[in-house]
Image (cartoon, rainbow, N blue to C red; front, side):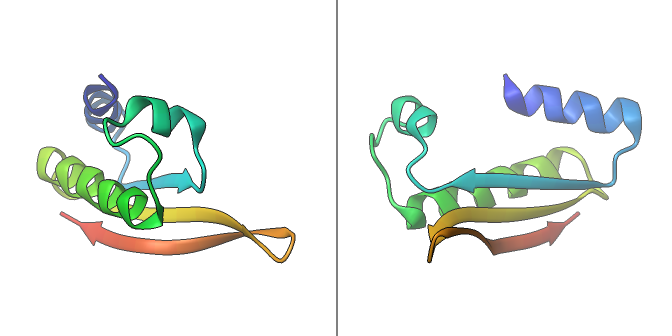
Length: 85
């Protein structure tokens, strides 16, 4: 499971900062998610939930979440949340 891999890497390497990204119209996420095609709100809610869970399991780690989307022909990264434990 991905969460276990994060916890393992943080514990073994001493990483203190993690960046999580998701992007608009992610085909993998749509297949994985029981909700099917989801919008930006669901993406960002799930990102912040993952961040909170990582922080709970790896105290002292800072997690930043970003949502990427195409605007005016370029990629824009919108910061969704920043949490630390």
